[in-house]
Image (tube, rainbow, N blue to C red; front, side, top):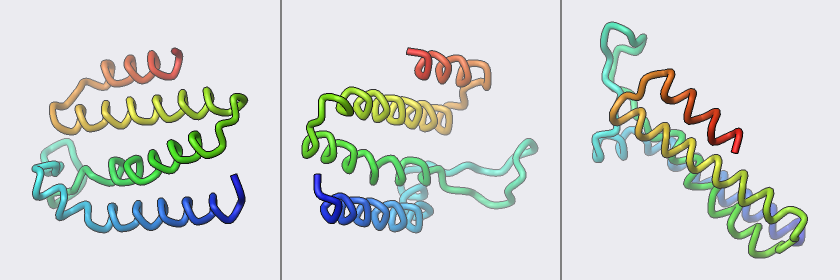
Length: 116
């Protein structure tokens, strides 16, 4: 893959991540993905839970395009594994935000994913 092509992809992904993070409050409000303050939280107002999803959603396509474009057997498996781990941990974060997993459960699943 040529360096200018990769730089353009990286720039687009970065721009998408910035736009996604800046729009996280509106998106979180629309889909009910807000963290509301309570006795164990330090924030005073509802906080959007969309930042990590915006970042993963913008860089995951970059990884797929890179895998397809470069098609280097040497790196392909590594990128697929890395991308799978990132997506699984992100989904785990969303589930935790929506349903509230215990720290032990979240840590155990994270260790299993990274250890596999």
